[in-house]
Length: 250
Ligand SMILES: C[S@@+](CC[C@H](N)C(=O)[O-])C[C@H]1O[C@@H](n2cnc3c(N)ncnc32)[C@H](O)[C@@H]1O
Image (cartoon, rainbow, N blue to C red):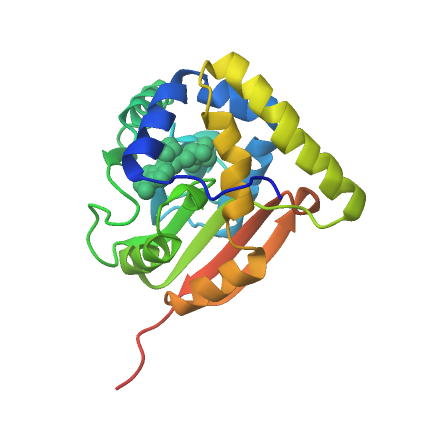
């Protein structure tokens, strides 16, 4: 177990927590994952096989790292990028930092950030050719509602990619991971972010999130097909890939 009781995911509490840690969020992300988080996002965007024409909706966009990664190909003259990205998040301080990064990268004509809840996004039906969620879905109070909302904003045939932490099953590694996640990470997080709860909430929320096979089932029940769960870095993180179902013939 990574926690004794289910974490409180009240939207105001979660948004307030991310607002409080926003100034140190990127630093801690890269530090606590030894920089591997960047590779996980790159892998997620690559899984979408973007062609440069798509509208991508990045849910729980935070400080816009996924949105910027989805446009990196355009800046580098490479393939595999979206034409435009709409990032959605309910934490204003995270979005403010994200907006600064978007401007610094000269991407303000291609990336828009809006404030909103993943359970009822201010986004019209079916406008997304692709959607992403990196390390966000486990924080949403009702996972099933968020999954249905992802299906709503994607067009039929649109691709979904989700990154989320998991508890590795390899015996020795599982014990090491539990120790790092429950003992080391909360302490480093507390010292650097100055927030007492946020980095204890992290292991608690990972422990409370459905295991990969259950989450795959939930995505299928929410309107997705071709659902796959790919373990990354010994199963510390899973990449979930899925396609928005075509409407059934009547
Ligand atoms: C761990 S951060 C991930 C940020 C970013 N996707 C990344 O890869 O760094 C989680 C983000 O999800 C946002 N979030 C959590 N629950 C949300 C919800 N119900 N609606 C919108 N945003 C939410 C938080 O505000 C936070 O910015």
